[in-house]
Image (cartoon, rainbow, N blue to C red; front, side, top):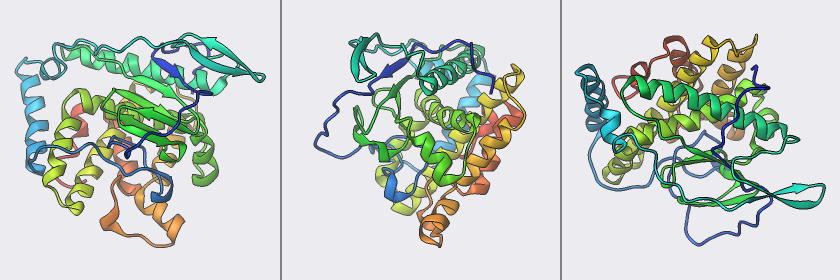
Length: 322
């Protein structure tokens, strides 16, 4: 991916090097990328309310019907399209040759290549989703990206690096310990910068679901669902985030930022982190009823669908089979 020298997002909170002691309580439910059960939190969102699968299907269909009638559903769901109010952050700390330096929020050290990379990818997702929302007559409320090490406190509770990358709907922030990328390559055989970009774009996809009302609706539906039903719905939510990541990749390719082999890197990552592939690698057998992110084939298909079609209405994973 041709990312060097491009705009970097200022929506960065670099909390690496900070002391983030654990808090009481479990981790709140938010969208994630998909990791073995032994090394990640449970996938999903906070619970509330009730409903069923048909409700989400109707909601998604209604979204596009309203759009075709000239009504801005995104504008209604985001409260007029205004950005949420984030409290100003205090200067963040940075380790530099054993010394702690103060750094303003949104800044990443010029010597921190991976930090600069994710800041650039986040900026590219901002450009894409700002354009898509604008075409719908709404404003895109950009998420924050929080970089941390070892453990972190979020509006969804306390999480460790073993959690893997996650999106917290409680504060509209994406959290990632950049050491995850080493695990992605080392343990899953998913290497390459565009594989890394796909991970971040997937979490941004959860943010899109949140501000359009899809994620909150799933939160409400969970209370009345059985574990099996919840897993099945979770798969549809995760696959849509994969498809949204593909939509971003579509526009990134149009901008001429992809290099030879980039899409193959992302598609390989999608395949390597399918529930069946992870279970087969970690325990030697698969338990389909426990899947909650989707199989390798499903994740490959929906990411590729987003890439090829480049339209959010191509990502309706709630209608029919997935």
